[in-house]
Amino acid sequence: MKLHEYQSKQIFSKYAIPIPKGRVALTASEARQISEELNNRVVIKAQVLVGGRGKAGGIRVAKNPKEADDMATTILGMEIKGLPVRKILVDEAVSFDREIYLGITNDRLSRKPVMIASSAGGIEIEDIARTNPEKIHKIWINPLLGLRDYQAREIASSIDLPQAQWKTFLDITRGLWAIFRDLDATLAEINPLVLTADNRLLALDAKITLDDNALFRHSELNELRDLDVEDPSEIEARKYGLSFVKMDGQIGCLVNGAGLAMAVMDTLKYYGGKPANFLDIGGGASAEKVAAAIRIILTDVNVKVIFVNIFGGITRCDEVAKGLLTAFKDISRPLPVITRLVGTNAEEGLKLMRSAGYTSYESFEDAAQAAVTISKG
Image (cartoon, rainbow, N blue to C red; front, side, top):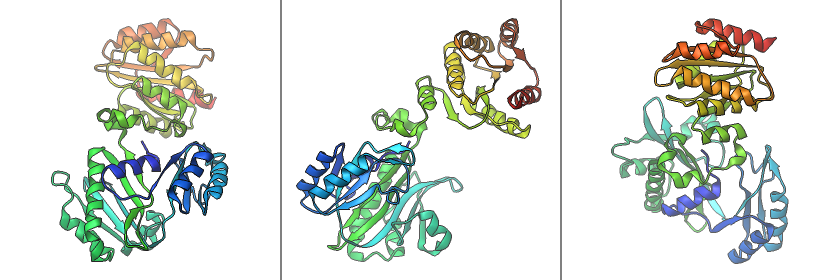
């Protein structure tokens, strides 16, 4: 789950990371008022969860409150990469001498968090890593010990930061690590961290990405979710505790268990098909949950066939069958259904499905091939 810049900056402020003065606005008149309060040039920033805001005209500098009003009016009427701009951040404009990149993410290979810094901030870190890898500096953080001061000093030295700024820089790195740790983040990033003309370090931009799987520990953060960037079917799936990702194929998939669901994706692709979704109903799914899953799959008009592949352990196959039949009673767009039910109460589940006229298979491969054939016909 990605947070907006203004949300990330609010969190930065709580962790004593210095940010420019400013606040979020919903209207042009609010932007004008903030500009008057700051009594300075301001930067108007569109708050949308996509990159390239500046190139799209979503970041502008206003010299006075009148310009702030006009620019806010323009930006609030924009769409950037298909997303409407509903909020803007109005920050004081800052003169600076240097831009630095500073971020923390997870390194899957080392199984540790890694702090990444570069003296070439302000542009895509991926481009720097590709064209000037010598400008990228990394330190790996032991999650049991946390970020150590000597590591932060090593980073400060590697990016040639003046020693007069090291104390503030250490405070910023501690704050960034604390955010990453406390919020179960997968990314905490400042790009750019600038050294201002009056020798201050400021986080001009802020980005935090949270681990969805840890949000149960942070209910207050779940309220920060921006639904504009999410598919409506994924929002609906979350209400029922379903793991759902929409894709662009024609075979609607209903599976229990993430491993089996991934195997279904691979098998369908192997036989020349294209899955329309990833959907894991989890263990012990009730008939109600299964019915909700089918309704979500059917919202995709591209789906031509539904492939149900259940390996019943905790999940009971007869419960799955009841949920399927309940959902199919209410649908206005009947579709072919291929089922494979194996495991707990499989015989009862298959009997229910067959009595209702649905095709069932014992072989995973046969069922997958049948689904692919129907999707192409």
